[in-house]
Image: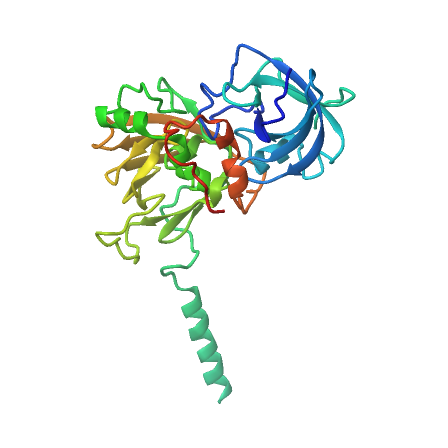
Length: 128
Length: 248
């Protein structure tokens, strides 16, 4: 997947497969017919409400240029993510992650929701 | 002070402290046994889909559809941590707690730090003035045949008050009626929403909840930067306008 370095911060959504409505209508934001895979290193992790944010540095496959992507967790807040095993220590700056999800229709973002999407450690270990 | 007088004074003070009255935490005699406690989110039951009032919902007035069509996502107050509206809040995936007191019922929601006070019949709380409106409305309640019935009015106008995902508005005329009852171990809530400005007919749904063994995770402490993060992927509906820079 090519990453445009001119996009300083884009949103990468991965919505856990929790039942229920998201904070936002995600219709028309992400292409749910496609799944893309990205690999990058954690730069920041904020375990806050309404939606925790993860920032990951991604290198473009073609030009190698790096950009910071913002990863949020869609419908999930701190309480529901804690019950799934997430915590302020789940992600460590510098560690490598692999994320798979639906690309945004506007900007460089990905929504991790439904079959085929998710996030793992760089070695494939599940999270949390 | 003579000893007997001191004892009498102490007994008098203890009697005063123990007397029921506004603000004290005695449980009302008509309270529903088993209703108090922490409950999981409501899950829809019955024929009506309750989790969303989308743009094509048959109950919407033409002005509701027109309002929604003109509305730009960036103007939605949720990006400034505005709480999820009633009744949308009932199906969000978070816990809530019910506490029945002598003159009121306290509904505390994990989501958005929402705390609702339901004033029961005979309460001493003043009615809202004509110009008072509230984010989560003004609620009164009564017990009828093993049901707690909550009527909520005096909502502030909310551009996403009928559905905060789809930005379906609600007016100051919104009225939400909730009927709480127990069905075995499950909490049943029958919810009816009326709004003559934005609904041609009431929207009704039923949700049921199971009791939770977990305590509420409080406070919510919404982070405005996190709330606004998703806006970066929303295309602007009015690109000719200057970009919105929000205060945090």
